[in-house]
Image 1 (spheres, rainbow, N blue to C red):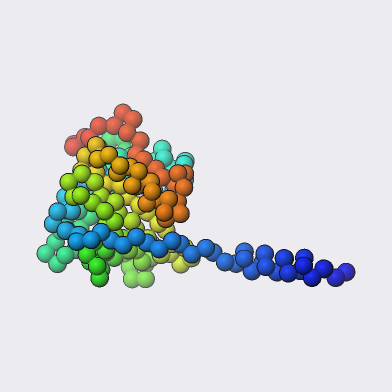
Image 2: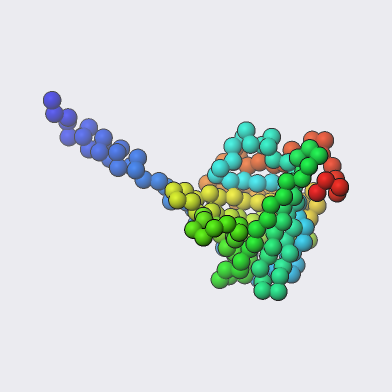
Amino acid sequence: MRLPCGLWLWLSLLKVLQGQTPSPPPLPPPMQSFQGNQFQGEWFVLGLAGNSFRPEHRALLNPFTATFELSDNGRFEVWNAMTRGQHCDTWSYVLIPAAQPGQFMVDHGVEPGADREETRVVDSDYTQFALMLSRRHTSNLAVLRISLLGRSWLLPPGTLDQFICLSRAQGLSDDNIVFPDVTGWSPQASVC
């Protein structure tokens, strides 16, 4: 039995389209005139968005801090600290300046050939908030992460909307946005 020409064309087109993946939206540029000396210091991570986050991950995200220390060679050493119960999880990495100010390659200190990751500061007023966007390239996918940072838990008006708009402009949905669960949380300097 022979398939009608229209049905054959439709099935062929469907097979071709299944093999294609949509190209990700272009990354926004790093902020103009980035000032590393003003950016350094401690930030609270107030929200995360990414194509690997799902609603069930919300309960796993505890409040945490990211401390950026600018070195003489223009690199940032970054330390993260998250409280989990009575202990502290920490991790660190180095941001290596790229061609434009505010744009960096991430060095996780792992073996050569590890996944390549780039990050950029999209916006910041240095004293209250910052928006950072990272893209890590694995063998078969690009992992996107957007971070909403604050010097305190109080953000200027419109900052949360800016974070959500940036997330949506990168093709993320509200299900890809997570905020730390601060229920019963208070900073415990003795833990971290």
